[in-house]
Image (cartoon, protein in one colour):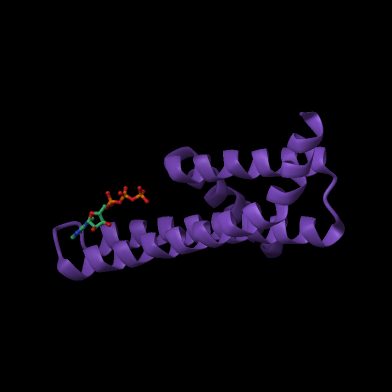
Length: 121
Ligand SMILES: Nc1ncnc2c1ncn2[C@@H]1O[C@H](COP(=O)(O)OP(=O)(O)OP(=O)(O)O)[C@@H](O)[C@H]1O
């Protein structure tokens, strides 16, 4: 029962993430687009594994960033240089993960997409 409850709390966290964080919603929309493109392009198993890893990685970074923002606001509601640095570092983690995912997405989806475009014309 306790195990089941921890899943419930995790899903509560997911709900809060997508309700309160516009950036998480943007990343989710990009993930849905990448999955739709992947289905259309007929990716291989390995390519799907890379896309799934990237999606999980970026959304997890968003969740950690949100957790750090909440904790920072709790611990330091007033201006504090260290609080700012903590939030900036968390935001940098999201940026780095998104840049890695964007490059991987280009690498995996780019060539088959290009072939489709060339075949079309
Ligand atoms: N308590 C604070 N003390 C000092 N600087 C802060 C503090 N809170 C926020 N900042 C600065 O303002 C920036 C924006 O903080 P904010 O809490 O608005 O995050 P955000 O822009 O809403 O992030 P996200 O868009 O990822 O939700 C931080 O990255 C930090 O540089």
